[in-house]
Length: 459
Image (tube, rainbow, N blue to C red; front, side):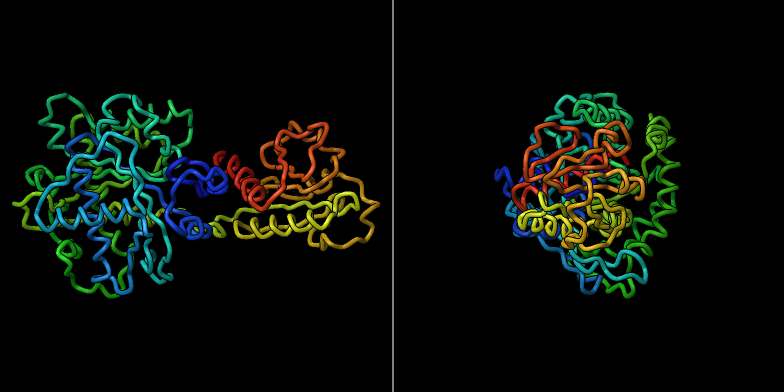
């Protein structure tokens, strides 16, 4: 999975997106996601299986969750499409209407910022976690990757919610099974040329009220005992000491019961085997939405998929334990004041993303001030002594205006994908495949994104 923050529209890194000046991101999105990576979620499901109504209920529940969890606040980040979606959801819930079908276009991302939500018991509440939602039209999953260009964001999505109405599969005009939804996703990823993709799936059985004659009794009791279901009407009992981790303890047992239930459905065993063989994390949920007027229970367990996602969401970037090595040139031919300014920019950018050690080119001792002129002119431009000293899992960024003499020796080594050479001048010979010209702070941000991206995707 890619932890580097990307634009939900063009899917480029945010510095690259900003340089192109095309996408209209919510104000403050980049600032909010610098220290806490956003969580990208896509819903996948066939037409008529309740995806859009489910998302409407979830939006209203998030808006009202502060009634049950003191201090919680959901913010829409001044994003007009998200605000319009919320207004429409309020109207639908108030009038017991079902949501209209999702348009068969590239999904418009919706943005929610979650504040003061306790995830793990005894830990500080999460603040500023940004949730980016893609509600993809069901028509996009009726053929094997047929409209992959509308799902270009899929390789960067961390979690997919597979929303399936077993009742609609049973009564549908076409004989399809749950497995075909997963095959469609895999085909889309292949057409997009990506071997990576979501690392977590949440299987959501929608319209669970229509399965009361076949669902395990434990699941039915769990649905009816939802302490948050009255939030759809903006009322709930305050849950003292609430945490997502504690809430999901019972949900974990229900997930196991639902997995066993899924295996018994047509194509279910194949579906579960596909997920397990893929090696992704999987949870199972059942939900009841408020769409049908005859539903007396409100929205039951609609927040469970979100809670599973947040519990396993990427940690903040400093907690990812990345290790960087910044190598700077202190030679009189390369230590201009502008280069020293760029060095400080790189140091700040890398330090925000992990532990950073600083070396001077030609000196295998870390931590010495790059501004020191001691013996600088005597040091040859050699990178080997530094690479031999540091750990093989570090990411290396080299800033120099000189040719590095021994760089060709490492061209076919493991450092090929883990080291980026940056320079304010263009070298006549290009001895290193990862080389970049630097002339501004924006270039520095793009360089750091470029350095991080291959290593993250390799993991």
